[in-house]
Length: 72
Image 1 (cartoon, one colour):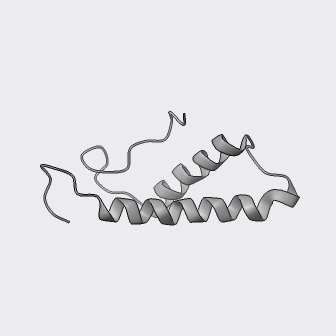
Image 2 (image 1 turned 30 degrees about the vertical axis):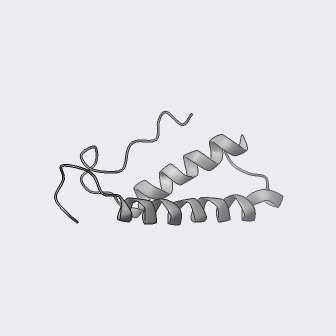
């Protein structure tokens, strides 16, 4: 699933931007919803899901401890 979403943690990616995280969240929501772009009546819930997943992803990346890497 979502093979084109790149890994967003070291050592795979040194610098992760908010745009990187949002793009991954958008791809995920598109994949699980089956919609590339939602109809107008689904736009709000679609956008909310993207934002919630982006926030959860940001928290995850900030909390991960990768063995063999310097502390952040």
